Length: 145
Image (cartoon, rainbow, N blue to C red):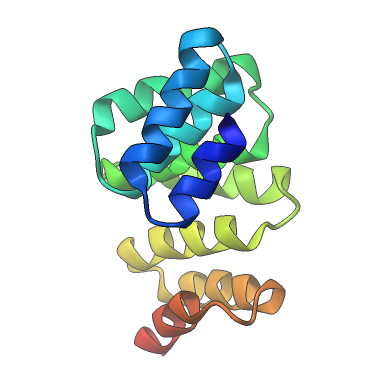
């Protein structure tokens, strides 16, 4: 069911993705992957940020060293405007994920909003070094050059 949620999200069916993730949580309320998926999905689309935070925190409580979950925690802090908290979590997530390109992008966004433009450029470039096809990151990098 979580794979279905992911497929629906990839096709732009956000409501369907949320529904599928909630179905997983009905059957398994402490499924950390589903908690994180649903929380991140809502955070990424600026929806129900309070609930998103609770879901992500429940996943992190279960797996405090899971880099994907720490990235989600940093991302929800970013969406809530808690940039200092976001920075701490995303810097940690970069190490825990061995430099996942999405985590580098998220950290770049935080640095940019903190007006730490040299650090933002470095993070965007690190993201592009691993995924050169990401036009969104390429645009962000061009914005602050």
